[in-house]
Image 1 (tube, rainbow, N blue to C red):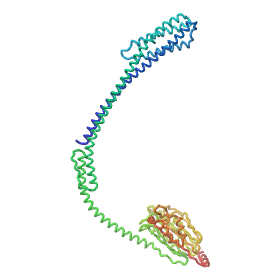
Image 2: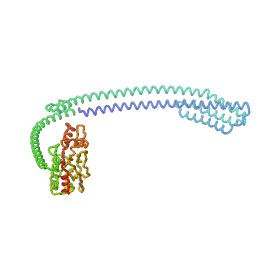
Image 3: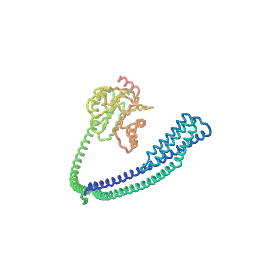
Image 4: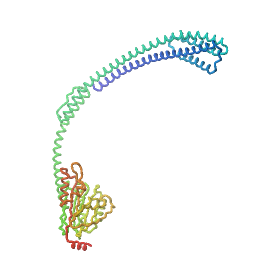
Length: 525
């Protein structure tokens, strides 16, 4: 038998048993409701009968009191409000008797009818008593005496008998309600226990057969999952689990075949990947050699200044570069940082270097050089690449014209202080119609100027803290500012590798006689 059929039969049997349990529960609830209604009617009858007896007794006492007063002295007629109140009390008792008659049970009638008829006569005598009171005292007293005998009969005979009968009926109904409650509770407990027992037995029997099958499947799946593809699951049942085990065995057999084929394919792919990696490594090494050759800078020997520069790339090919270009009355120094890393940044850096060298040789103003480079790149799709550039033109007199396009502000080291060359130009390659401006500054003999890329200021340590401008200014304050920058960055990062290229350029203006500087200034002007 399949698992589905077993589950369906078990579910159907549980539904039938549950329906039987619900029928027993509903029948019990109905039986309790009937006994509760009977008990509630008996209690209402008892309360109503007590209220009738109390009201008749109060009226009887009131009439007796008025009768005594009328006998002893002349009584004036009662006012209309007192008469209305008395009539209201009589009518209230009449209404209560009618309510009591509505609550009568089968086989009951003589005492209720006697109560109704007797009270009607009593009410008639009491009303006549009130009508004659203060008018015809003798008739009033006679009517009171006639009604008094009937009311006395009600209070001393009829109503006590009815009270005793109602008390006995309430006790019988309470006993019946308690008996029905115990019976229905016992029946509900028995049917619920039977339902739970059958459900537990059914669940145990079905779950045991299913769990055993799943245990065998789990063990086999674990072995096959651990690549023991020779293992086979032995499950002889004819249900879904047996078919599932058979499917697992077929899958394991096919996986074993596929594994052998895949092993052969992987060996071939690894061989081809190794060839590709070797070829890429050779091409990358060749590209790095070409880039280094293109960007190799031969430092000119200047009588008025010395220049040192160094680049440390975090990849085999980087986007940082520097260049030193002799010009008519001095030397131009370029430092550039292209966004990103790798081959794309290296290509853009090579193009920028070639463009700026050519335009410096053609005596193009610095601001126009960077504006031309900006137009060139913004008018082409360069995958969002941009560059920060700083170009300085140093004259022999110590005068510097510079243009800074979003680059780290250069640091000037003077005798007694450190300054930064600020600028508000945007990086090259962001906005097509950007305008750029250059600025000037004067260097004194023995002053130095340090240019760095953001790979220095944004170098991070193990705690993800950055080197920053403050540490840069502290480093350049030492005697050998150029070497101190690299030493401080290395000590700050520790074992943490660099996450960007680091480039540092140092320009030191040599000291010379004042006459020579004045002459150089005159020639420059």
